[in-house]
Image 1 (cartoon, rainbow, N blue to C red):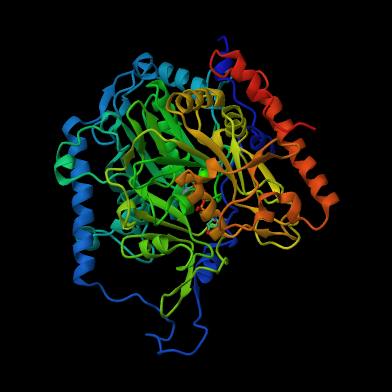
Image 2: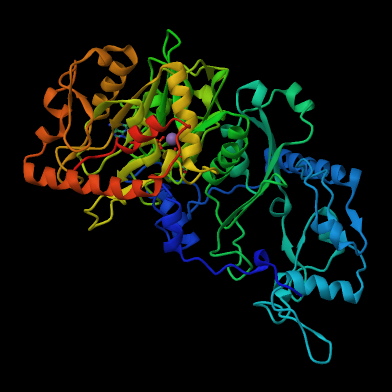
Length: 623
Ligand SMILES: Nc1ncnc2c1ncn2[C@@H]1O[C@H](COP(=O)(O)OP(=O)(O)O)[C@@H](O)[C@H]1O
Ligand SMILES: C=C(OP(=O)(O)O)C(=O)O
Ligand SMILES: [Ca+2]
Ligand SMILES: [Mn+2]
């Protein structure tokens, strides 16, 4: 049998080479090594003596209540409705027709109504063909037998057979010592189903179904997607895309294509995604964002990893940036209407938020600096990986024991000045955020269109790895379109659309450094949020457009010489470093990193307009 090139097993990729392909801007991993460690991290002992806690072990579990019973019944009904839907169509039985199965025509995704292909009573010859084609380690021996491998398990696993124990099986089955029936509760067997929408633009709305095994994941997506009204839910019909989140279950890295115990698997033809081996809820949100990055450009709509807000006069601003650069913090502005904090579409109709919720970082969160986010963390919000007092349940937002990447997910209407529906007119302001831990980018620069494109394609930020000892050197990250992990087409496709839209609607680009000033991480300080807010206010009001500008060395950025409410000396980073040699050296180092990164884009085609293309190539640092 001729071996097809696409049938060949890919070599297992190492983590290192993967990193070079796709820059992941996600936060540092969790600090606990085991589940027990993790749980012990979450609850910390009260610092001062307080009211004695219930029970000697501080155990909060109580006997089943009416509420438990209601929840049990509700879960049962979800499961029952899923089961009955499945029965409506039943599995599709295919008798021996392998061709049919393997030339599967994609049908609209619906976990309940979709046919399950059953290969029914195949003949030995058919089974041989199937095994040899799809199951690695299958061979025909000299006497004609089928030699196979059974994988890691070469014997039965009697200790792994679990049976749901309910009112009926409790009495009927043999349980306990010596019994082969290991008990499992109904919750463990159940799945949660959310039917929701993406995109506030009704013309381009996407129906999504999320099937998950954890209530946390279901609530997270309830908050993050657009919640249908009861009437909309009634007419929901078949979803356009379905996520199956089985994050508690690690995948076996020795299975075909798996390179670690985690896998986020996307099948665009089947309109399905499966999540294995990670329970980080952000995978679902950003997984759907990835799908949007595929579907929308096909319709001529630009998908954006950006925050978005609107002034009282209807002026719309976008905030691009990698994780932790300030999209959520700065788009949540008490003086403006919030359209969304993270994912948007820009179409002929203007901008629309893809989501129905926000996902804010909450490390070091303070009521004074970020009151709207602080107040949104109330009943209904999901608070991930934070540490709280075991007794009072007060959250310590300074505590990084579990992770630096503590998060809150809340419905967008928890922000008082959210603009609902979350849509706006064509943006007039495009702000590129970079958290520059090298401390050499100016707090604000006005960009030409070519510079905006150069920095959009570069997608720079530099953060510090965490609070671990010995991390002195900031880590530069270049992530095309400020979201290389989520884009599906070549970065220049999105860049060309952005350039065209900015030109057409006369939008101005800005580069705002929300990172270090007065020296790199370790010697300088992060620019005060209050200053960044003043800068953003001046951009919105139009007053910064009127300022006097000068051009910086190397990066050739236009920076204001003065502006109200900000000490003039901080506007040019050169003035803030005590050691000007060290400044120059660091500046050149960063410029070198930009140049090296952009080498991959030197043959990029931005529109068919060669002039803009030349300008973009020339918009990088000159040294
Ligand atoms: N000058 C600043 N500008 C913006 N954010 C700042 C600044 N200084 C500190 N921060 C903090 O940085 C973090 C920015 O995170 P966030 O807005 O969630 O980023 P993103 O949404 O882009 O991932 C917040 O925790 C915010 O409090
Ligand atoms: C949710 C995320 O996005 P951001 O940090 O940009 O808010 C993420 O990258 O996990
Ligand atoms: Ca991100
Ligand atoms: Mn964010």
